[in-house]
Length: 173
Length: 151
Image (cartoon, rainbow over all chains, first blue to last red; front, top):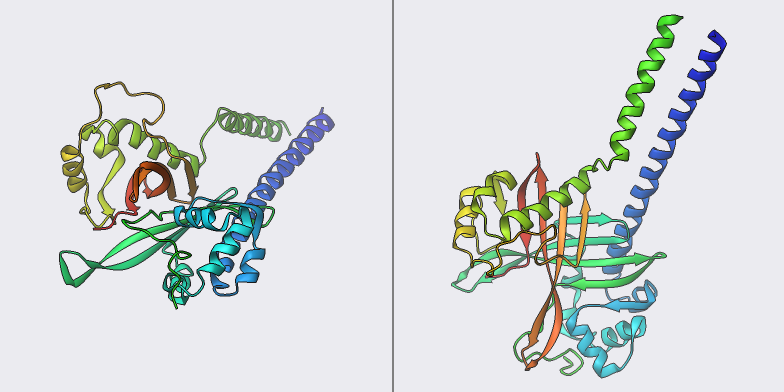
């Protein structure tokens, strides 16, 4: 009887240990994946003007949801990673894509990572339209889906402004 | 020896009981936060139900939308003044305007919404654009909110 209960206890304890190890292992690999995904997004922004390295971080079938980039795709007639590379090269002298923009993006106010997704939030200080001597804080986001260690899909809050022109239509000198 | 055995039996019962809770879909903190925000939209925000504001919004709620003020009272005023929903008052199991994506981690929940907007150059042409609402959850209520609104 004693031997049976000992065996039961030992068996039960080993099941618990295995379950706990499995649970912790799953937690750890989940945390590691989120950290790796976070790092990938920030590496992409930190690389800034290094367009070759940044292009290499995109999946071949990269899906873009930014409507300005999609308008540029209508001009370049490219898709996926090639479309991003063509648009960014065509626009690389443009004021919108200079370094301060990337610096801003390396300092998010919050980052939320879950599964294959990483969302980062940024704070901007904008002039108050009612009082030009004042500023106020506004927020923006970047969201990516990551697949096999590459950026596979991108969303942000960009909208088409009144009388919009893409950077390809109006290249800055 | 008998007492040791009964300790193991009790322990086994307690463990199996706890496991069955998880098996029944006990939500993790992150998933509970997602459900809280979904229910907030579905039951309180979308139907403009000001009576439910105290259930979902913390008293010292911090609002980062630059057009609104912090505090639960100010949120209630904003909701009371907001445009009322359509004719159909039914509340369904899903949000009327469901998000395209939800990303949550720790105490933060992000809802990403897809909207169809008119191209300013040609109103007949529509394009997809995205907006976000991020929430920090504390003690089962929404304690902080950010979105992409500008003044």
